[in-house]
Image 1 (cartoon, rainbow over the protein chains, first blue to last red):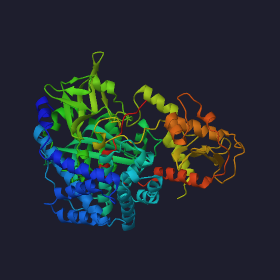
Image 2: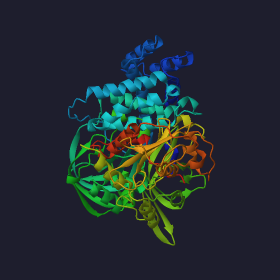
Image 3: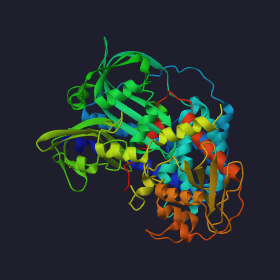
Length: 462
Length: 164
């Protein structure tokens, strides 16, 4: 990414501010609860519905406002409002991504719906989730206490046991944990209104009919890693590899992702989270050793996610991610985004930046334009530190957008130390820490995974 | 992305749950601040199959310690903490930090204080079964059947750098 490209990227597309204002109004109403809307919040909810009035959601959203005004809050109303909010943020996502594609000259595939396997999700579990989400909406964040959070316990337990509803389980458990540590929410000085409304909205959509992860088509070819993005909350971890796929035979070189995830507990932290993903040794080796992977007939969804299958993957030659980013990334075709996944938080576009000045204020100056580097997003499971980022001369990162601002999330950096090039990548420790200090710290605390797995083996009868 | 920042309410990504510090789990495999108590499970020094369930109430600081089969621990009596309760407090401070544990238990403590000596409750019987079943539920996360779907919702939950 060049300075001129960045300068074009950061110009806010028309309509984004207005859409975010409508979203903010609804979020404030949700914080106070939808059961006692004062005039200000009523107006805000009407404005949200008004913003989608010309869309197919318009009638349902308008009806929902009418019902809310007379104090009726059922799943129908909540789904309509969640749908309206998600549609607005989806439009913001689309505008931002179009701006990004234009600025970077990135081509993107058209969205194509692949038919998914027709599976009826367990209706009682979805109903349980909806019922808790309704209680939250009625109480508002300010009305949340420990009792209301605990009301989700049984539903959560059942959701985790059902692999088809994993997305909902992971999301609701993450939200519940945040609410639990914030109880009683009424005493919080500031409430994360946007965040919790985001999580609630997505949960309402997922609890409507289960996951919408689409069907997949088989692909074969050579996968060249770019970098790893690690996601984590108390009870889940996900490592998502961004990579370039050189398909065997016809077809464009494509930008793809491969994500593997596991359930965990909060005391498993730092480099140990990789142990939980050890069922994917080929993927972890490719990440840790920076190797290409030959894949054969691996399913790829329309939105660019390889459904990772070790049986269909073989570790290949060493492949330098910086070389891939320089040579292959500029011409790779980016995937479309599934309609219901469209939300600014989902924007995570890999870029290579070089020739910048890392400034003291935490930005990279690309000559004429500067971008904030997200120094919080440096996972404790990898070697990247703010010092390495500040000393770097080249960086593979993800472009992200939050609260009106673009940031660069580093996945890998290259710098020069003692006249030798030094590299650090988020996934370097995927097979165990390579840094002696980190390895020692891990040895000192012992393996949490081993201790807990042993207890689980003894105490949990199947 | 701390809550002191301007515009924090408008962020989709923010750290809400304070980070947990790594600690050895063999002696005290489970600690939590929940249900108005500091509670957890402490391994028995003498038996591999027995565990102690220990808990301390917020505010009153009344405590209890018994085996998971509700046999009272001989060490906890009157106003005396047994070694299991002491271990529970020590490990909780390692995991959450003194400030967070003290705040939950509603006790004034400054960095460097021995939290154990500031808790002046008495032995009050509390059911061990509830805490023990929460421990079992905690362990079931390690037995969760694997899913194969990517989890786009995890973009709301980035791994954030450790805070020292």
